[in-house]
Amino acid sequence: MPSPVLYGATYSVYTRIVRLALAEKGVAYRLEEVDVFAPGGPPPAHLRRHPFGRIPAFEHGEVALYEAGAIARYVDEAFAGPPLQPDDAAGRARMAQIMSLLDAYTFRPMVYGLYVELIDRPARGQATDRAVVAQALPQTERCLAALADLMGAAPFLAGPRLTLADTHAAPMFALLRWPAPGAALLARFAPLLAWWRAMAARPAMIATRFPGEPAEGCDS
Image 1 (tube, one colour):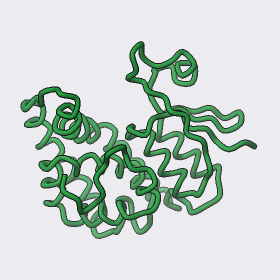
Image 2: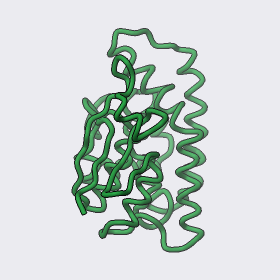
Image 3: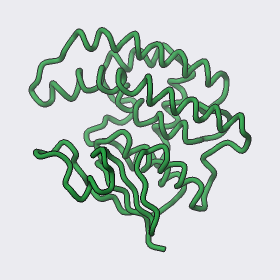
Image 4: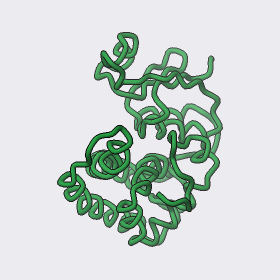
């Protein structure tokens, strides 16, 4: 069977989620860049892969998938390499709970409310909406508190070893710690900060850095 093809963008949180799963499993793949924000929107060929015009999409032989969580689960189960899901039902449920929390409550304030407003918009010559930032800060703090509570004393978000919960969260945290207010929020949660630093040092994270992403330890 041919190597899988991932359709997405190096700037995309959800593309990076799948890239991390592939890297942690040691799976060779081809990344086909798709810019869904290009003038005119997603190309027609991509709309045939993903009817909602989002990224990523994924092909492996006759298997065609979209939605990062589904793709990452397929990658874990279809390829050899270290398992990225807990062995027991309770552990898998906790992993799924964390991934759902990240998608439903964390991504928008953490990424759009802080990173986009404080880093991306100014870089494009646009003004920061301070009202959006002010709303995002307590929402992000609430998410961090919930994640810290679920993590407890474990070294990883869903237990004693790396799972898809960690590869789902890490790209969001990479953008959170980029603007100074996000880094300051993260610093208030010592276990999460230690988790982030360990994640940031992993070869898979280093190999999939966002364009322009500062290395851990550099000033934002």
